[in-house]
Length: 271
Image (cartoon, rainbow, N blue to C red; front, side):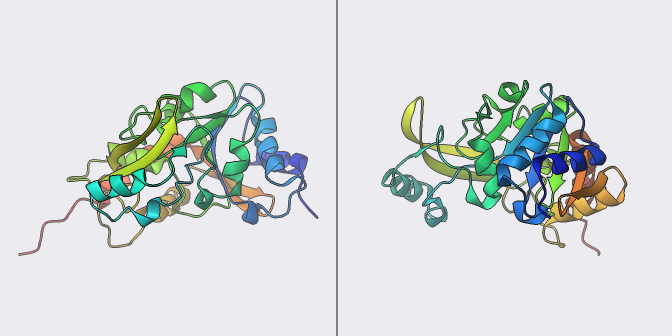
């Protein structure tokens, strides 16, 4: 039997999502399974659960066609190559397809506010939407005063519906707070159009692709999430066919920051 907007709402209520919550959603439509109405019904189920006083947030990114082909070039070569490509209008560009179909469906939902950032667009709907996603810092856009930081300020929740274990965007905020020496940074260039016209912009941040420091276990986000879930700080259940987790954003940022401080600093060599 296919899930519906209303059966998903019942599942979300059992999980603990409440009216008035501010919630950031990471979800796999494939994991949730067949739903009457598809992605729109999933979005509606979340919005029904949090009610008119709640705010739903998603990271949607941007589909930067052609950027992968130039990212390994030198700075000057990147700029020249990007200038030869059509600019991406970050006001209307589709969501990053790697994030999933739900992100693009959410971007197109009536009433959704989309933040204008070359690298990391967030989208939200509800009374807190504009505050959370607007005027994102150009650099260090996942750090202090980012949408993630504003989510934490509102005691926001994180809802994961069958998402990959490395998909916990809030842990990028934890990277900024972690006491880790010599954090890796990254610079990227994008050819964009917005209200100020077309231009190539440089964006600098902690390295949110390869991590702020090497770790012998590989992807430390997965390890942090698994240890966090094992600590009992999340509510777990099922939404549709998907494994679901609901937890406070501040809790995982604090947990992740402490974990990174303990595990990502180089250890003294044995003599």
